[in-house]
Image 1: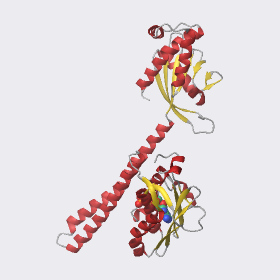
Image 2 (image 1 turned 45 degrees about the vertical axis):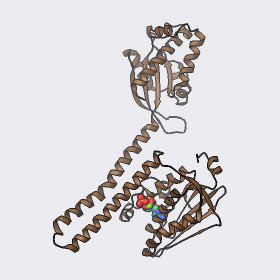
Image 3 (image 1 turned 90 degrees about the vertical axis):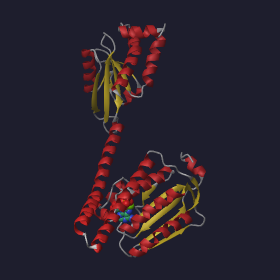
Length: 390
Ligand SMILES: Nc1ncnc2c1ncn2[C@@H]1O[C@H](COP(=O)(O)OP(=O)(O)OP(=O)(O)O)[C@@H](O)[C@H]1O
Ligand SMILES: [Mg+2]
């Protein structure tokens, strides 16, 4: 929340709470509070007191009023669940200090602080506290805003920008070096010019793949991607993906095949399921040695359709499994960069699957190789049951 909004909120709270303190505790309200009460019309003590209490409950953040002795005269549920009120007093020394500072200065104060310990059993809470004096009696309003999630998102965004820049650096540097060499050395040597031009094309291809993945991810994450869900035949999808990868598999000496239980259907966006299967098959071929076997399968699960892509390659080390679907995560960065991978394929697959109400996971029971499974609702009613709009 912006400081102005917070202070504005504190002022509104100040008017109501100043009046509340005066009416309930028999204390003198500040001129501002008296003006507020006057402009609000003839309120009875009970009504204005109740309104103040209800008003601070409406505030999404922790809201409390402390008196000069540090006693909490009013606190909403959010403040109590943050654990900042204990035994009728503010339990965090930094918050007491900011309230004292605002009282002494006669003007609002702001402080960013980590609440020690946080909610029971949880991470510490990062908060921004706004303190505003309410009256001459020394009452101070404290608004405590939990910024833990926005801080986390900010860190994710920073990481993301850092990762993207890092990923763009190497193909761009390679393009530049290749172009320079082409200009300097390939003058009247057409075979060298052809070789460099081919390498430039390959780097440009890699770059455009990365950009396409990033755009995909951005569209999915911002909710701009549209899903046209309809009944799809699992066998058709498996067949199409296998046909698309047949030449590449053959080139590498990989045996690629599919099977499906009879009449397996899913209620899904066909292109998204195809894209998910393609990302999995791409990995299975890419990371498995020549002579490996890659199998695709679809079968009905309990109340969903289960798709499986399994290979006989090196497998995923157990320690890497929890991070596998994170964007830019690679088990062996050197190896996958060699293969042109940027660590976005599985992150995209996870988004696509979950956006349609499914799950995706690494099957830890597979004895060797890698087996990844994902689900899709079998019918539109299941898709509605799990809370996904169709
Ligand atoms: N079938 C597999 N066998 C072995 N390792 C795998 C397999 N699938 C994925 N991995 C590992 O998981 C990492 C993440 O895979 P992901 O598909 O997200 O990224 P990528 O293949 O590196 O890049 P991209 O898919 O964006 O081209 C890979 O870098 C690889 O180390
Ligand atoms: Mg991949």
